[in-house]
Length: 230
Length: 381
Figure 1: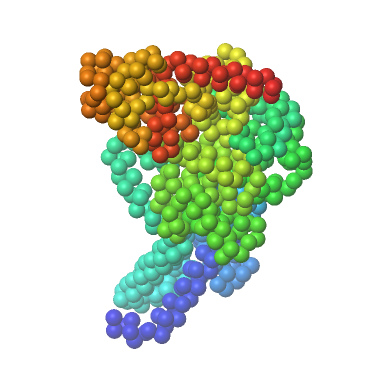
Figure 2: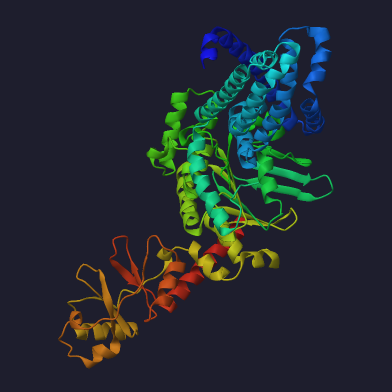
């Protein structure tokens, strides 16, 4: 604690940089995955190739990407942000697709029959109903991203990851633990914040989840599936 | 007026859902499409708002080919109600109902005011306005569905098995509500159901479909029950057709007997005379203001002192009554069958006795009604 307090300026600086490196990829990820997800649902044939692509993003070793990117982007934040963005896409695109597909067919049909245009229907009906699933993906992407930033330390851009390599070299475990704890706290806070955002964005879910809990319980009790479960 | 002109829907793979359908749906009436699953009734309905496009033929709305109108524009002028309601889970009841006015560019406040008027129209408690669909019962959700479909005051209302998912009691209430609304609004309603009772109850016209996309018969429910076009239609309508048809004939057509209706202060001698004159073995005793009290048997009248009043006798219960002004011959027949005297009491709206039935009188009324219906049928066809 004493060490952490004494070095609070440096820690604050690392914290901000860590957050920046972790959240920019998630931000880019969500901005890209919403239109891509909409496209995959609307034009079904685009989904299989895009799903394969996201699996590749997921499997790509960050280290390999760093060494490739470094030739183009040099030792800048982009060298870390780009691989993490690809990683977040591998989580976010499938959640957007799943979320949009979770919209009950009668709701979609009713919207069409009432005269919603295609875009308006997606924005006003389908996306709001997809929010719970999209935010579930966003939570995974955000927490993973916060933890993955430290890998960037391999090329010297790793936010709080600096504390790991520095602590290692100086053989000073306190520094390593401090970094670890700060990253875990960041991850928890970001996750909690997203839960709050979801609650704020989906007021209707409160009424529904109370009822569904009763229903799921009763269904489990009577050995049948709740209506509408897939 | 909605007109189907040789409309066919063929799916890839060769299935023909609707086969060269010609159909005129008149304005301001309820047309019910009824038939077994897979008969093409729902496909036909969904072609009207272009959720499904026909493979051949065309559909005209007020003389205009609907394919010429931009789909979303066309749909905003056609209300649509489905079985699973399709309410938007993320919008409150009032906002669900306001959907189409908002799509049409109304201001939010005006659209919500309109929505509240509609909640009133379909019998929803205004306290539900701010709730979400999940917080309502199935029957209430279906009312919201109807209100939402009516919000922009479209001339046409399409209903796809609207009441199939609710229990029988709620279903009957919703059907009555639809009939009441329709009497007030005179929309062109096209309703799809597999329930022939529902078709007969709510339809002005009923189109019965064969299993494979062709229409077997289009007629008024009364004509349908009276003269089914073929064995298929007769089987589809089910048994008791004759009795069910009586529901379309007013009990007002009955010539009720009044000779054997006596006030309780009449003497037994008077009652004896009345029964003999009418050739009946029971007289109906009423209070002085003509509310029914009960039946007195002729045998009892003959065993008593003629100067006593009929009010002093022990009377048999008068049983089920029927309302002459509102009820049908079916209700009058039912009351007669249930009465152990073989006679039933017809009352007016306030419950005062108008007269009594007998099987003879019913037979004459049914015959007259049938003949009138035949003349009517001959004139329209």
